[in-house]
Length: 217
Image (cartoon, rainbow, N blue to C red; front, side, top):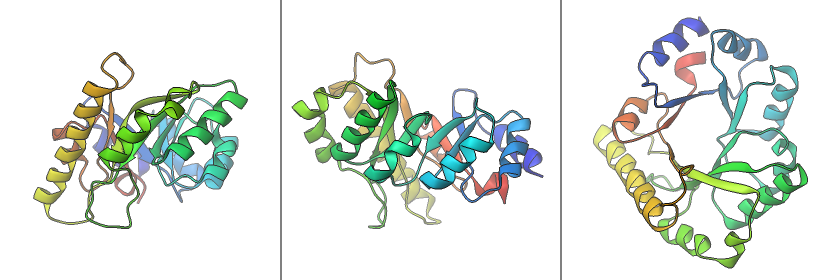
């Protein structure tokens, strides 16, 4: 069942786009099924659940943190996490840098931007991002690498609204690339699009889509 759904999703995604299989609340056996079919990138929201799954599943899995991350939880994932999508403050980035240093790693991160109309969504404004990217504190961080940005569109059936929000995120990416990361080849990721809207997201420039329910449910 998982394999059939995964194959269906994979066939809709260009080779230039990374599929993150969102495995939060899923069993180890369901994740293993997807792994056996060739899926290697999985996304989790909760740190404890991620840490538990990491110990039980193959070690070549690339684990992404896609949910809101508290600073006091960073130490539990710092030894192995591949990409943190949800950096929404300088304070969090400083803690990731500290724990990466403790583990002799450089951890890749995405800056999360608030593009939806719902107030419940986390994320930076462009002004907040510019403020900390311009700061001395940011310049001192040597064990984190900003490789792109992430955003979540509004939960709505209005595809025009969703497309507009994705366009907003792409324009933020273009601005940051031009102003701060023009010399950084690693700054190339736009994480946007989930089960209900990933095709729209890809049309608007997404390089990473986060798909869960369409694979596992």
